[in-house]
Amino acid sequence: MTNPLILNLEQHDRLSEEEKRVLESIIAHTRTVNQGEDMVREGDRPKESLLLLEGFAARYKMLLNGKRQITSLHIMGDFVDLHAYLLKVMDHAVLALTPCRIGVVPHGALRQITEQHPHLSRLLFLNIAIDGAVHRQWLTMAGRSSARSRFAHLLCELFLRLKSVGQAAEHHFHLPVTQQTLGDMLGLSTVHVNRTLQELRAGGLVAWNGRGIQLLDWERLQQEAHFDPAYLNLIKEPR
Amino acid sequence: MTNPLILNLEQHDRLSEEEKRVLESIIAHTRTVNQGEDMVREGDRPKESLLLLEGFAARYKMLLNGKRQITSLHIMGDFVDLHAYLLKVMDHAVLALTPCRIGVVPHGALRQITEQHPHLSRLLFLNIAIDGAVHRQWLTMAGRSSARSRFAHLLCELFLRLKSVGQAAEHHFHLPVTQQTLGDMLGLSTVHVNRTLQELRAGGLVAWNGRGIQLLDWERLQQEAHFDPAYLNLIKEPR
DNA sequence: CGACATATTGATCGACTTCAAGTGTAGTGG
DNA sequence: CCACTACACTTGAAGTCGATCAATATGTCG
Image (cartoon, rainbow over all chains, first blue to last red; front, side, top):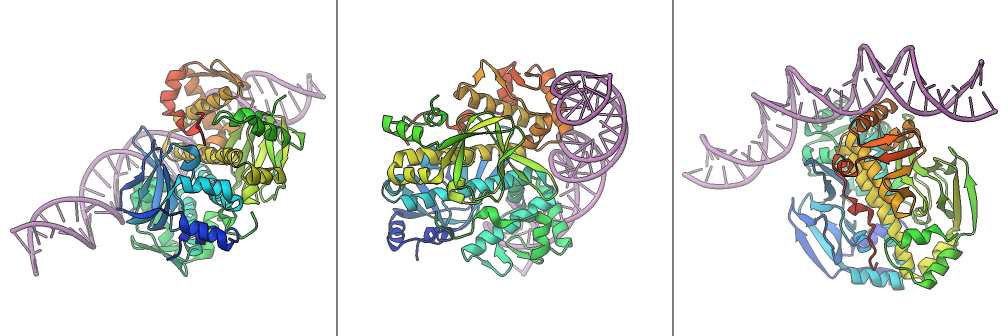
């Protein structure tokens, strides 16, 4: 199977054959991580970055009050901790939401890219920049919108991202997470996640069975969410 | 005056003399921006990035419901839209909170750095990565903590950042913004900002006169905020 | 002074939390 | 095949934090 990082980067710009060859070579080895297990912990100083080959992962921060906030959700083809190459110390942990297969990329390989392949290097750092754009969107939703619209927004974003890597069918995708976990993404209590979900269901917007989500009315869901996909940068252009 | 970007980058790693020379040369010209004016708008495709030489700036997003969320606050030495070099299209606007002096850095100069100065290039992208870390912290506070503690956290962060560029006295700094603006940073209504501020004052934690903030009890303020400065990456190490 | 923005205060409302109990449903071991 | 357990989901009731609405102060700047 080809490296899904190629798939990821090609969403944003074209890659030369040589660049693809480089990307094929950077995964030193692969590993699996069990559901519920941390693949990186806060405070770690990783010597390698992890590329998600299969499964869902979440980055999260714990507060001293015991609460957890998931700051991003990752899918096939995402680097979950590329930024650690620059930041050196993890400011958060990364959790496997489902069983995951990951590719291990030594920081040495990344360094070599930054030394020898400027264009590829920009594309990698673009990933970090997009991460930031997604964070800003989440922050905006968290600070200034209702639970309903935030929830709807999460579903819109996730659907487009999954679709872009061929992991979503026509308005339907797999999302095997608990409502508890959704709460930690949205900054809501489990109870309120449940109630909000019921509102969305009652409105004929989505169907959910705990594993998969069906977006029943994509247009209205986007309206509900005030969703504008621009921030995902799913546009191919020279960078 | 030396380019404050040097000051900024030197917080995270050492710079060679040549690198400093390069940084001195990248500002094509400077400009001033009036208080309350946007220096970049959402949807723009900037051909240059702006380095804040003086003043406070905020990046913000507007929602369709008319609400505004400020996603980050910028001070002397910060690139306010470095990521635009990679993202191409602005996903948010940047506002001058005070009169600002800015240095204009053509994207051509940035490109040259990525082609010819790998180490410097990493340090620039580190800035984007730190930006992300700050976003994550804000998101976590927005999703999972009280107004009090969020407010306290903002003050802690701001104080350390200002101190690191020599813009804060001993537990005192200048912050000429309205409570309205603070609300847009914290995701709170103006009224509640006011009340929360009064709580902090009553608790003997801060004093504020609308222009400057005095942190009266740094220890307790950090506790209130659950503040841990690690995410700011104010540590010099090879990157 | 007059005008306008900003800060403050009071009263009410509502979204979301918390606590607590009840209802699946899948897995385990007898 | 059926009890037993565990975990997720669901529902109800009560409480709280912060929003909203509406005045009233307090600047501050021409």
